[in-house]
Image (cartoon, rainbow, N blue to C red; front, side):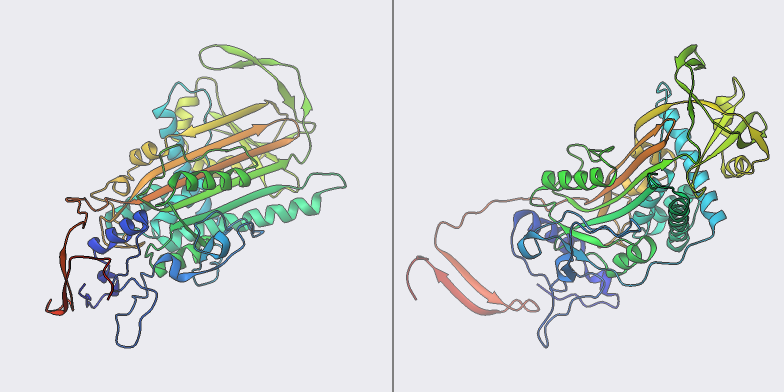
Length: 483
């Protein structure tokens, strides 16, 4: 094979070689490609620094370790490590500093409102919907870190935050807020009180041997605290799917036991990005159990169990709606209810944006609150909704540009994009979980045009590939004959 010499080392990773790596992994063959090895002898071809195979950058990691921040935790992987221990692909650089809180609220509120509207529009008959803007935003932003050109522009527009650094600043700001909420709850907790749990966790799994760019791993580490893990989708995609689902279940207290459905991860998968989020928080003041009361659905009324706040909570009256904010223990986290006037749900949902979210938080009134207990479990058509929001190219085998991860435009695309959320609210507090996942695969594997079984005499030669001139030449009529 000729060694490709180019001014841009990334360009040395051609489409053919990209697919050969995937095919070799799928078949278990041992293939060494110029520019894709783990090193070289003096005078031999060197490995481009930005496209080193996953297994070449690995180091030991404890698969059970979960950092206290909830991000960058390890998980199931392939068998590249000692005794099958998953191997970490370490990016360089410390986690970025928190971004502007107001900017984070605006981006997540606007993106979340857009996503919720589309979710309701795609399934208007479903009574209840729950999503996690934080979880969805995080996974799309992790993919955006490797996106280029129009693929990147579409994600930027949907997320209401342009660029890798801006998106990383949004998530780091929220993570800092979570840390502060946990500290406040710990300070406020009395003997016997359950501590608040808010646990975000990000993870990436990369096909062992896949030449992911170092700068992409660096972006995951700096922006999202992610340490990717080597995996083996090519050998057993169903086993990897089960392992990733187990990782999610562990980090959502089993509220989301299966994020990736059957068939969503296959032999062409080379990268999986996941965010899991779990929350369990007690109210600052527990509610009192109330009597069942009528709840008007819009089409009629149903009797639902109610609960009443022991003391007034803070709220605000807006144009056509009333909002209340209910603090959790310590006051570092809260639930806001925005209740449209009767008949105004559709118009309020249509108008929901970051400005309305900000107005709802500016509490000015004291409110005596009675509200229903409720429980929601939602599985959204995340891919369909993302496409409705203008994120289309990433899912196209012809238009996707994820060349910031590996290869060239058109080599990779998003095979799947999945999201689930669960929210349970009662007199004591709230338990909620969400998870989002994206599977990235190669656009195609090499086609097999011929099959050959070498079961008869043959010739062979060995040559250097610049001229093709034989260095060695021979004939074999009996492979069992001794030298």
